[in-house]
Image 1 (cartoon, helix red, strand yellow):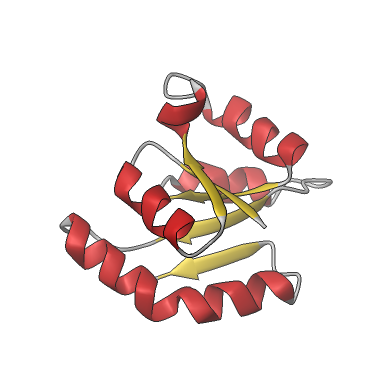
Image 2 (cartoon, helix red, strand yellow; image 1 turned 180 degrees about the vertical axis):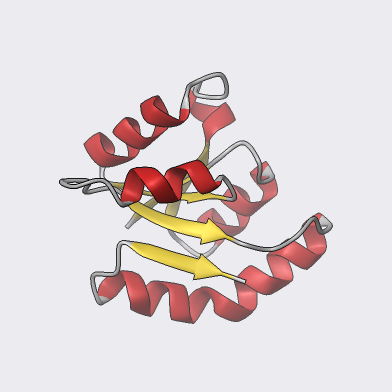
Length: 109
């Protein structure tokens, strides 16, 4: 499974996911920092990567008929990097199980 972390989240999250033995990049790594939501969503679908974002706009794109990309929608308020990584560490087994079960949208609160 491959992942892409969006602009609103730190590159440290992509590094943490990579440290779990998974393929993960930040949009900055791929030259997508200035891309529109639609371009990032299309990239996620075309490359079969799971997008991780706080942007509610991606939730609307996921709800479109025929949409195939997957989204981890982060619903945490502003928090420090350490707090964010701590939450991901705690919920990561649930995220992986949900993705393996075929869920396309997973909320992290």
